[in-house]
Length: 382
Image (cartoon, rainbow, N blue to C red):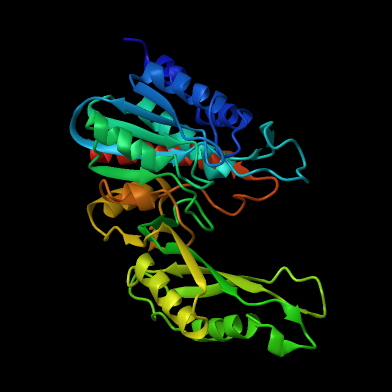
């Protein structure tokens, strides 16, 4: 058996792997080269890697990757995404040319979440292949998510792959690596309202039918709703009007229709279909015949504090010396799908620069995150 120093030198380097993943441009929906990089890193570690492409435009095609490594005992899974949001103009360097400046590594995806995926791999390389381990990686989390993790879950069911515990590597830390674990997320639904009217000249209102007053009345009632006051783990649910539109450029024309869009973020005291039905009932009272359409992007979920959160918190305390806060704040993530399989928590890098220009991660945080993930695996398979 080679000396430990030689073995260590053969393990994936978390910084170099992060750089390689950043360099493989992967604006959502992602496929191809970025998955090549990950597969190349996983195969020598004993993982069986399965890649497949799902869907057609506009939401696809999307590539997904399921990597499994056998063993006994509990089945643990890391989950995440290789797709990234578009970089936009104004970067100091090139968004997909990883660059180390000082103590930071810059590049789109460094934080959200190629750094965490590199840390998954580094951790897996350090832990003997005794326990069952999977990586559930999609190329469509930042986009519609139609052909991403949901298709992975279907593929896992067909293969008989079902983890007992799952950690999603989303950037959950707020101010210091390890300060926050997400144990749940609020649900999200978007609702479109279209109120028909009859176009006409403003000087002859009796010959027209202005839809705007009816829409405004409905929106006023909706805006006055208090859905709930929140609970022990979730903030209060909220409804926000995000758009009002008539498409009317003329000053002397009563429009033929008026529309609005709502966004609702809700806790586990609410359900998406019930919210849509409630909004529709209000709209119909004010504007009979209006069209109301809602899309649910995820229901609220909560992994009650227990074994999994304690296990991850214990690993953070052991490696970083801090006690993390358990939180449900922030937007949605693919944990909303994975929770259907098993208990899920999220833990990853500091989220201050995610989706921003000059996204960057501290080199020390990359190394420390790999250490925490390694400790998680050792505790799971102890």
